[in-house]
Length: 395
Ligand code: GAF
Image (cartoon, rainbow, N blue to C red; front, side, top):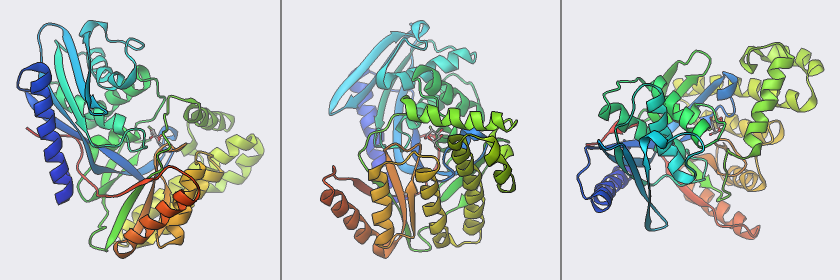
């Protein structure tokens, strides 16, 4: 749930739309309503599948699922796409990897993952509503998965904890939607805490909230959606994962978490050039997460700006997942008053975040819009986000 009045109003509107949509599509009242947020990753990018550290936050952009169990083995899922209802109906027993494509693979993937985990779904009606921009790198897919997982966890009495739910959602994404992603997004969407980011250690599985205190320090976190649509089922993300796995293997490590800054010089001689650059990013990014947490815990959020910008440089030059639009957004924001900025999420498009003094937010936004216009690019969408709570039952 959102910590801001605007976020609460948007969530109420989504809940009302989910109820109305459910009634219109299924001529019934749902058993309940569940919500799950999108996320931005403050810092710690491409570290999750390297057993590293990340510091994401759930945001006040949400998916709401209105759901009711059925007992005839049928699963019906409906949503609104471009102003029109779109839906699928499929026997629960037929849901398996390859059997569904498009947006429905995410909710149905969770139904499939629950069944595989020993919680078969006897039938389900599901109406989904969202205000998480799709394809913007804000984890719209994880928000859908986690809202459905929260619903099934309650409706089936499964009582699974956060880590297991995140794993089921990741399985849906990896196997049903074919995106070879890590578990960052699902962990953030399920585990978010109002006013906090979540420090996640992907080696131990431990997660703890870290206070962000943006309001108190008159700061805003802006999302700059470049409108360059990204999808991780495509080649670049999987290629970077393979580079990292190859680097770890060449160094005789289980994962790149085992490599630290003092070991980098010796590693250079043993790695091919691309593997070395990927490894250098991961080592530096884990350190930047630790430094960011120290500054936030010392109640100095404005001081994290340079770390955000260093993260972007490393993602651009060493990990090679940025694009001209993200670079333009980051450079322009920093030149016009942002304390730091970086791409967030997997990259190859999607969104950047910029940490800005509240008094400069409008100026930074205008400068970025103008820079995109001058470069002949599609207008970006720019909005502030607040750290919100993770998935929950609404009603
Ligand atoms: C995407 C993936 F889904 C995450 O698992 C993570 O790897 C991220 O890119 C990069 O940090 O959001």
